[in-house]
Length: 348
Image (cartoon, rainbow, N blue to C red; front, side, top):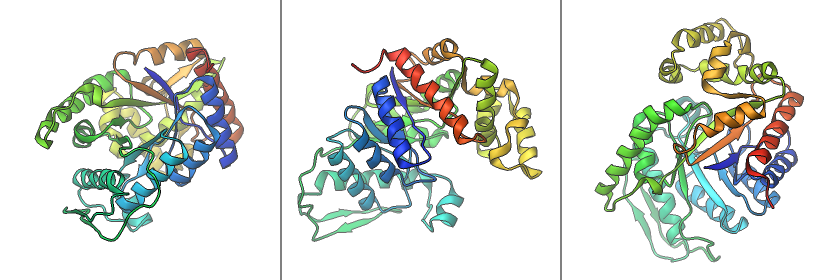
């Protein structure tokens, strides 16, 4: 099981430094999100700060760029990294796409399927100079008179899909090179809710002209990881992160699965009463934190990570950020980087 890391930084320089330190600690992949920064620009900063670790987007929004622009950015990042780039794509939510980006939403599963198809086609044929003509309900593409005049590092760049619901998870199993979870994903949820849908998607790939196996899809569990010598401090740092997710009704099934439906409702009520998403920690119970995050001292968290062995292929660790000061985030992140070195023995 690969240990990977999602760094944090107030500046791009700090973000890059955190990635560099995580690589030295033994992280095999460093990941960047897309919300407060552009995923592709952040990835470029990490590519230049690292030498061996892969660099991935977890995730880049799939519908706010054209598939061609997404493909060109992926080609550039793969060149810049000498073949270390992973393109992680996700849909985001409808309001974000339509209100923030004026982007088409469509039917997200079908839309993402066509987007991935187009990105792969452009990457594979960018230097050929031939017409690229693909039909589609959401992403028809007609490109004539284009030929990339630069060498391509790889004609196929791995594409991982973020998925939570059953249909999108099946799509990840069917067409993705990997699957990425949201930040809260327990081993039991992975076994009972995610793996069956991944396996179903893998079986569906026969309809696309070729069989797939479980080995074709890397399962990346994202884990909010709060480490501190004092277990109370570790748990408290993670409360805000749990509160942020619990305030979103989309995660109702996830919290109900863990027997936390009433606990989630208390968070939703607090949010509805005017408590900001960054300040919901007080509405989160210790039971919620323990059920859906990794928290405690290094020995306890290392044991929690080990529970994913044989189920997940990689664990993406990130320090909690919601409701915390930059100093608190840095302290938590330093502990996670130290934990990675303890688990892996560091990079020689």
